Image 1 (cartoon, rainbow, N blue to C red):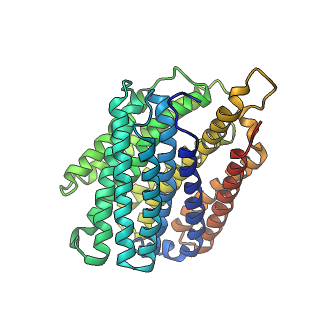
Image 2: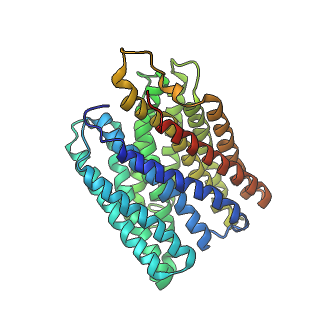
Image 3: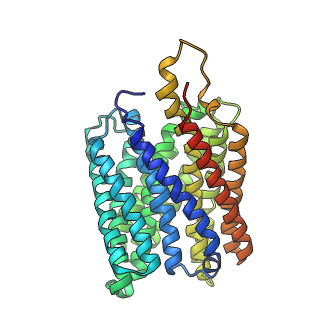
Length: 411
């Protein structure tokens, strides 16, 4: 293990909680399929499900991954491991209470969840900002993560206002505008910028494609960051704060897709393992997001078009994050328990810590589910969406079981 890396417990507790949220979100898709097909995105059940994926699965996974990733990528230890454990507890309780309060329509539970969530994310932001400030390497990853933290702060601010609005109506007629800022800052400013920054280091490492042209990665960071800034400062201004940020977000997404394509084409690893295959599928799914946005902006778009647009983005990010678990978890376990014995006895490879055949089945289930769920929304088929939800749920359960088995492997 690198000397600056925290104990396995810190990322491990985040990963375990995130996997449970993933399973809950996937299972929940089946029960609210008719609501999604109808395009009723303001419904409480849709809001709960969205946050199980975005705050529960994606954000919790990212938090755990960054605690392990930053010391290696930037050569700087996390500012405070104790604070990291505290913010994890606050974040976990906040997500549970917030989604419960929305689902049961209980203002007191929702308020408690918002307070805990705000404290947890604010503590996380402060911890990482201090870490980034101390880092001496100011490469693409540093800039991507710095922009992502700004976006997370904006998403949190507007999210708290939207939560208060559910019981007070404080936002009035600007509710839809606040929702747009919250969604885009969270998905394209926070989640996607982290994916860009982290994948810039992980994809070349796992694909053995070091030395590939990185210009599209820089374009992706610049465009996504610019879109986030314009959205945050000028969201009330037509064109500059509304349409232009969408154009920048989609351009940044496509720039990252091009960068990932370069990494895959320049690879020296002939065979792709489970994690890299699922990464490629996730990138292809995310590349469809601009098409879904175009459909949403065309005349005659239905409310289901908005569900389709956000759904493709969320599920694309979901697959990419799920793919990284097959790389990160075995790597951490091998380094912690097997690495110190290198040279003293025959040891398994990192990829040998999990069954490749079962992992390939998980990939098929997750990929099929992530395609059929938005497909059901697109063709207004509740049955198709439910089939996708079942496949996604089984895939999430199988992956969680397999990763738990990996975490218990010892020499």
